[in-house]
Length: 249
Image (cartoon, rainbow, N blue to C red):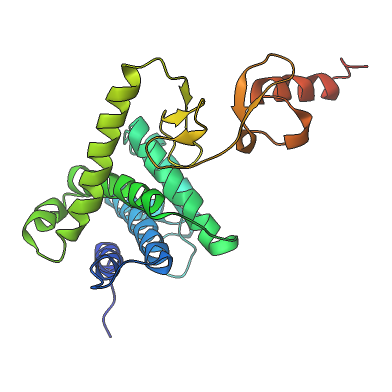
């Protein structure tokens, strides 16, 4: 019986993602779904490996149970927090956006209805691939970046990572030179959502832009808790606080 190490387990999930991306036919939504799940798993396992490098006990949800081999391990969100607080590992804004996006899409796949366009999928996949290969090289000392260049099967990943980086750089430069009002996209979490055209120029996510009935600011319905209130996130919070402290009455 062969027991996978954390790295072997992560690489197996990455290989599985590559297998789907190298399908000889046109990729379908089911392929993208499995790739997103695989890459989310890769990121989580790399986090755990980085924690193990600090001390194996930090991989367990309850460190007091170390060295148990059956105790529950940390989830991705908790692992990220431990790496920041205990390991002093820095995560850039782009890293945070990539991880938030992949986590949200994974949760949709596992717990809700799931839908995604090809363009959105390419951005999500490219986004997290950029992070995975940077983290694997800088924090876990893996040679995955070289293999992505030299292994014909792995080279398929370049289409997604390079696509995302090239698109993001071009679009951010274009928007910075224009007067188009933008805000963070709820899908890819980049400042690329065009408030005038009501869609994200990077990932293509579309959503209605509303106007706050109090401050007249533009906002997206997915940002607020009570869609029928007609309030932007700031005014919604202030209104909720006033109600909670009886200032409205």
